Image (cartoon, rainbow, N blue to C red; front, side):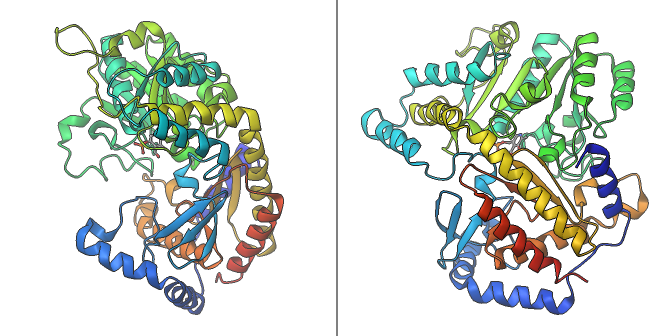
Length: 466
Ligand SMILES: Cc1ncc(COP(=O)(O)O)c(C=O)c1O
């Protein structure tokens, strides 16, 4: 599916009434889910007494109640009720080799036993992992390890402001760059601006603005109005990992605009690195960003994994150290750059390259998207699927593409989000776990047969729609 076809498809979904489950079918889904996941329910009830809302992950399924996992392996997850699910959640994106890829697990265990997990000073793995990352991301002349994508994005805008001496940061509406105060702005659905920003004083957003996805004219206008733009921050596939897909050429237009105006371009590669391409969004789209952000994907799911990389003249402002009052972008993190995570990163990058995992997972992604489109046509549903290699989107309610300038759309957020929850539950009943009922991350362990089975199971779901 090309960009224009995708956009036509999305428009067709958001401008027409939502296609929902037949009420009887929805009842059956809830019944089956409830009966099959009794232990998950018990754990959820227990969790509710000690954990706010009873669940910790934003991407967890909450309808009719969240699931608890027992273990993961390859491309499967087993729940506490011993239900085996085909895993397309893949830990929220980082897992490309498949869970517990044995050579990788072996290396990590060796590090725990022989080196120790966290030292508090430099360990060689920190340098090895940075060198390995740089091999695939040559724009990163210098790299610093951090603990989460949120931290890396937060630091990126700080250092961009120091380097340029300017204040304004522009993001693309709907983009997710973690949950630091300033970047909880215009999240998920473009145009919602401060909708999700309770608890954050409005002045925090004084120098943050967003433009609609792919709207280069609006961005040009902002450059005229604001003059002092420090950086544009974007996800290379488009906001929300391409849920609102990037228009071909847009990334290049933004790069040129930034550089004509003395602003920095920050590429948030948290999902793209190794998943879209070994060299991330920058290699895929042929862009040379000034700063790059890496998250969970660099550690292949091991904790405290993230990094910021970029031009040496910019990165010099984030050298470590305490005090002295020198001009720098302050940052820290006791557990950052620990040997365990850096070894996990070093070996993961090596194994992903060696096994050609990104390409394999990408081909599976294309098969899945094509298979889904065939059944949507067969059942005359307006739904669409498309993929950016190993990231597959399935738009059924297209909630993230509602137009906040259209009064008819705003009131539909809840209903369309709810439908995705219903769909997520229906997928679980078919033994498939996805990202929020609308996204599938593939890994190199997913086979053609698994894709065929998945498509057949989703066909069962299509039959339940009104
Ligand atoms: C594009 C992008 N940037 C930043 C983040 C935040 O990363 P973390 O969850 O490690 O804080 C995410 C998380 O999903 C992401 O998808």
